[in-house]
Every structure is written in C-alpha cells, then in structure tokens.
Image (cartoon, rainbow, N blue to C red; front, side, top):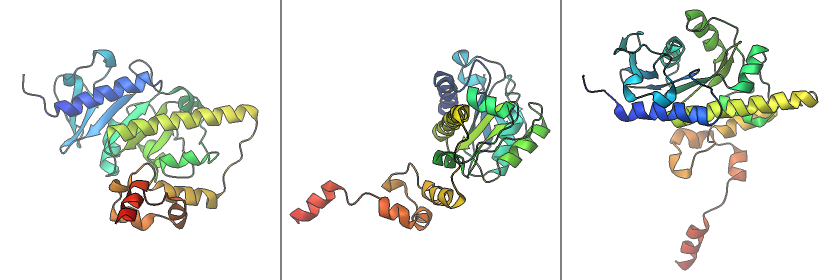
Length: 248
C-alpha cells in the first residue's frame, strides 16, 4: 500500500468527527468533515462510523471532483468541493444534522439578529437555503446562495454547514450555530424575540472582525478595521508592563 499523504491532517479530521458527536452536534454517521490541502481537500469516507474510522478512510480529492483510493468520499463531497472552489478563506468545513439547527431548517426559517452572536456567521442573520436533494449540484447551488457573505447557513430540510480557516474554527462555528438555533427556538416558545437594529448589528460585526484574537495574532489589516468602540473597550496596558515601566 502506498504511503498515505497528510497522516496528521487525516487524524485531525477523525478527531474533529469524534468531537462533533461528543459535543452533541451530530449523530451516528450523519454529517461530514473536510479540510483543504495544496492539491484539493481531504474528506470523510461515506458511511463509516467515526469510532471505527482510520486515516485511510479519509479520502483525498482534487478540485475537479476526482478522488484517490479504494474508499468512496462522503455523498456530500460536492458541497465541500464547491465551497473550497468558491471561498478561498475556507480551510475546513463541518456539516452536521444538529437537532435545533435541523429543526429550524425543516421549518425553512432564517435565524434573525435576536442575539448579537448571530455575527459569528458573518452577517446579521443565518440564512436557510431552499431544499435540494443531498449530494446533488442543486444542493450546492442553493447552499452557495445562502452562504453569500456568510460562513455558515442552514440547509433546507437537511441540517447546517459551517466553515472556517481550520478544523478547530469550523467545528467551533458549527457548535455556535447549534447553540444559536436552540436559543432562538427557546425564545420562540415564549413570544416574539426582539430583533437588533441594523446599526446595532453593524457595530457588532465590525468588532467581530477581531473577535477571539490575541494581540500577537493581529495583522495590519485587522488593526485598520478596529473600530473606535473596540479601542474604547479594550483593556489597558498589561499590569506586568506597567510595573516594568515604573521600575525604569
């Protein structure tokens, strides 16, 4: 057998699948995970339980839809392929059938800006796509429309899909989408949630460009996008540096 390429990345995909189920945002063999490579991407094989998955069950694909090896890629490979083709910022993708996101998707409900954390998907709502059969070009088409200027969406009568620069971020975003979906569902049981205004979400989205980053992670482009509110609300000089300055 030829030596497998990207063994560490393959193991990282398997670990992401296991965490996806452990965290309760997926069940059984539903859902799938992929990560970009220089030649294309790696994706979970079709129908293999995650607990039994080995590195050889992670299928290597190119961006023309070809695959290498004896195992077939996930039946949803086309969605992953089309995101990697269209969205250069996508480094990894997580697709799940999480309970609350799927319930809202079956109702064909967008999730509006009832909570500021809706911004983790890149906009003032999380859209729900139209329905199309799994694994088809039609599904990719409606998904890409719902993902315009977004990094996550609901898939009509199906589930959710989220991407990020790496596996960790993609899994985190999928988990946040499920949490937001559950909170929205809970709020709807009591009444009509209050929706944040466009100007309120505008400042949230500006601030979220640097959300979760530490000082050493900022790039020049990030610094230019930091708003006056971020500068106002940022912590001051670290205490250790202040003490050092005082000694000098």
